[in-house]
Length: 293
Ligand SMILES: NC(=O)c1ccc[n+]([C@@H]2O[C@H](COP(=O)([O-])OP(=O)(O)OC[C@H]3O[C@@H](n4cnc5c(N)ncnc54)[C@H](OP(=O)(O)O)[C@@H]3O)[C@@H](O)[C@H]2O)c1
Image (cartoon, rainbow, N blue to C red):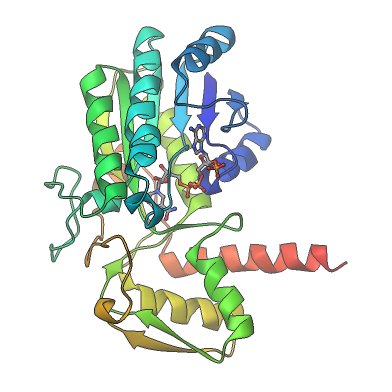
């Protein structure tokens, strides 16, 4: 297959690039905003045409959740209108669109994991624009797999794990919210899951939504505590409430995703959140040791 990856310099795109360098039967075309702006429909069409794209994995997004409250038009352009551009190109070229969405499409008032068909109720500009992106893809009539994920982290870019490790080096104690529950996702595991979905589906027609995170349910406080422990940082983590840590964008209090559909469809086992966190922190330590040589 000829696979276009957009937003390839981000967390997820970087992990897909690593997978593609391993033996892969596919031809990969990696792009980011400097080589293919997904908002530019002419450029998108030219890319599909020139490279005979039959699969597009959209890793490009506007992911600054708080900043989106001040830049709703830009967030909507990248998270909603641009996925529509990709979906329409996929429809024209009979290609599959694998699009990544978010747990922030949900309201957060549930008490059990959200199933893929649960009612959405986004609480932020980011969540609303991602929900609109999903809607426009479904409406386009293209072949699609929408994969919602949550709390994504990796060894590249800005994320909670790297921020906690940095604070662990510079602070004696920190406060972290303990009343928002979800599950982290190592971008490496998500990249493997996306390729599994693709390989499993082959060229079949598909119009499906999936959920993928690591296994488990934790709070940001639990996550921060584990990061400090595994990272060997002597920084005390104090639990606080959401009210004590106001943010511009409202976060769902509960956003655990039900993973049964992707496990059944792709036949995959999903690693526990702590095991994957250990692997990512090992990778970060290895990268730091290379830099200090
Ligand atoms: N991060 C999370 O915690 C999280 C949670 C749930 C779901 N997700 C979803 O997971 C997916 C991957 O997230 P991620 O964390 O890997 O994102 P990321 O690290 O922010 O990467 C996104 C990439 O897209 C690029 N991009 C932005 N606008 C673009 C455009 N117009 N055309 C082409 N590329 C563009 C960005 O470039 P610049 O950096 O130059 O803008 C960046 O390289 C996204 O759909 C996101 O919504 C993420």
